[in-house]
Length: 613
Image (cartoon, rainbow, N blue to C red):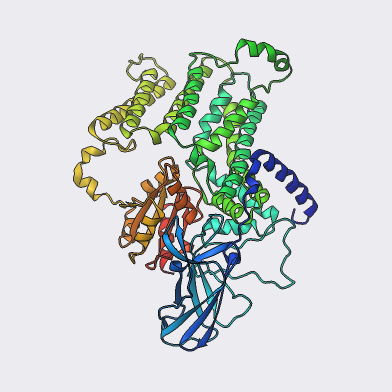
């Protein structure tokens, strides 16, 4: 596809029109320059004991004086106190009263120990903002003294050099913007992949990433939703119709990922995070409860008779009357059930935010969502083929999916309910299911194996429900360890765990970063499944706890999605949790160690080991 620019242009025009219609004024957002284009740095060795740095500032942008930092690459060289020109005083919403620079400036940096010469390398850290109200995270570049032409940049931690400009370099596909990696993390590399110019590789990579994401906890709740929809259609649904229903659901989900992703990239905020509140989650859970009631045969969900009569003619000519409802369920599922941020999603959002190329970014997200939905389609078709076509077994299957929908409804409202209520609800669900599985009824002597099996399942559920009930009454608040309170305080103290200190604003964060300690900042939300995975499986690992024993652990709880929460996320170019950012003792981010999405304990340990590189 990289050799078909005309086809790409046609696709781009069509997709642009689609997004323009559905996003309205989203494209009215100002086109922001990348930080390397908004701010340039070059320098020279005036003599062996002093360095002169020239900083270029584009019109409409400014730099903070107090965010500058200079460090030589050679350990034997020590720098003195920099001498800055007079700046402009500004009342900043994030830092209070500060001094800023809006035009090109020069900084003189004396050398206290050792000598410098042209060819020496100096690390320069700066942070700036655009006048429109968007601020960049701190940037660290390496400046080779004596080089002209605006300076040659290289990320201090990403170790990424500029692409060669000779004529042998492959030409980019027309219409695809170039973008350099912004960090050494996975999301930064994926953002760079989007700007590589190889459309086929981009789409294939994001489809593969979607396949991997399909097996993460954020996607698992979609399986009972889709299966319940198909089972609820009755015994006359064949494999072909099952595949059509599943494909409609996945297409609705994929289109939502693309549109919401483009909106997030242009605005810097995830739409799904705004929907994680008690009213929205409660309403969606109520839909699942209503669906489960129909599965149990309490009532039939159908249109009012007046609407049925109006639609009877069209209904007699097609069997797809439910496809719109299935597509709507796919849309809602994408927004509410799976809002966690993973590296591929973050990479696409980052690319859209930096380049404004909503077409390629949205297309990558659409293909990624198709990859996420492909296993759902296969499972839906396979499950339909395994189900009995008629008889009492079909009713049992529908009731089983009714239980799954009730469990999903409870899972959805877990973030907005007290922990004790959640445990009592899980206990009630398990015990009631056990009763219906005849856990308390005696088996006849000649009972066949299948009945004995389901009675065994009922007994297990009865024991689990009893444990949850006892744990809730005993003070436990972890549904996975309901009897943990019986181990006593000594056992609890022996369990390794990370203790975080909360930060709520940028001012609080900057104050903690100024303490001169290595820092780990964790972005968390109650509705973030991957965040809870990190807490349970990675942060509780004894090796991780030991590796972070000398690190200041900070946590930004962005559950409420308040303006302060959004400011913290935008400071680091994040669109939502989970995200982990590391800082050195000088308060500068170690970009190559940024974590977006869930990492297993072993992978997280590998990330921690890179902090000293």
